Length: 195
Image (cartoon, rainbow, N blue to C red):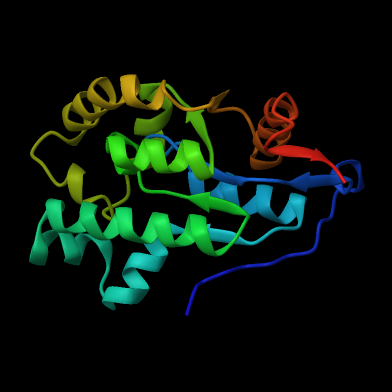
């Protein structure tokens, strides 16, 4: 059973907008993909989907437990299958894990069936958001900040291929980020248009 949250739109300024393609949130861990994605879905009155939550539900395990038991390659395979299924099943806002957009197959699938929105946060902002959390399997290293910096440097070129990029700074509230994403998407009538 899919974990789909459907909350009525609460901002009348965006109630006339229609989502024509699934909006896929991509970016680094800590960029705000889930929080902003959930609020964006509520604002646009569409379902919110989370690929990591879907994987955890199907496996009945947490992401760190899957990484530990089955390894990252297995997780990435399941992640691709789940993203493909969610893109096919429902039009809404889809939050993906930080590594999902590194796969060429995932990038192609997302660009063909939806639009990738990169929440572009700098390394210092990301570190402030993730440094006190133990839920990031890739940061369970002797020097997690250096690990995060390495991931950031390796992943930014892939995220730069997203159809839309939105700056995510440390001062913006979730609602301000939703405003930024909607404003950016209004330049894409194939994705977001009026009824």
